[in-house]
Length: 344
Image 1 (cartoon, helix red, strand yellow):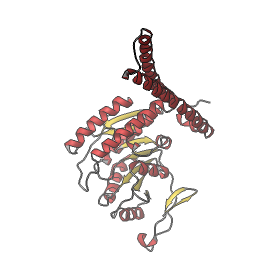
Image 2 (spheres, one colour):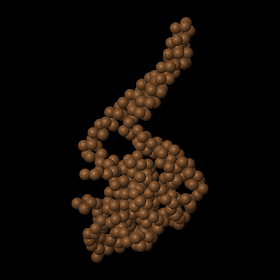
Image 3 (cartoon, rainbow, N blue to C red):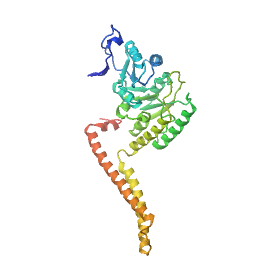
């Protein structure tokens, strides 16, 4: 059971699963420098092995670190394995979701309990190589806020690689953030980035884009990718179709979230202007004695004007809602998320 205290969220585990001699609470430790955030779903075979690999990769760095597992409603024995690792290691946190909500929700839940100044996300299937974590952190130290991995030598089926290439190319063209591998699970962030970016649906793959629109600096480095040894991939065509709609959401939120009239008003003026030109032409012909009452062009002109007015009105309503939300955000000091430096 997860309980909330002044220190944040704590995973309270039944004594029968932890052992009769297990202590109810852990000794307090200082906040780690790095949090490794691992969302997982039905990965019982890799839970313990992943911790061992992360420990071996970070031991030479001398960094204080923690591993935050987020069980996204697993139906196998993943949670029991997580309990074993949690009881044996003092730098492990476990968050268990009530059901399978998706990777974005799992990452958001993990961010809420992560204590590190930097947060590294990675998948639990051991395809992401933990030895790449120090390189990601080194890139962060160069002044970047988000560092994304690029699986340049992918060990995935050809169909998935082909769809991924089209997907990444399209994403770069639409958003202006050109990364070779937008969907790579191995990424490093300054903690403030994930605290300021809202994650829902399946927007986890677009965090570099969302961060870019907020003014954070993004970089990409090649990382090693390993073949899957356990379980099966859950990616299919339907995920790329959903990703396309998420891409439209991100593109709109990034460019027009605070100026919806620029989008809807522009479309409205284009359609309305076209309809007005058609009606003006028909009016001139009518003045010359032509009959226009039964012409389909008249209906088209009227339709374009009406639809154009509707789009323009939608843009005005959007501006009103945006202005209202901006006032609420200003009252909550959310504008600080956009401030990079303050000299006093």
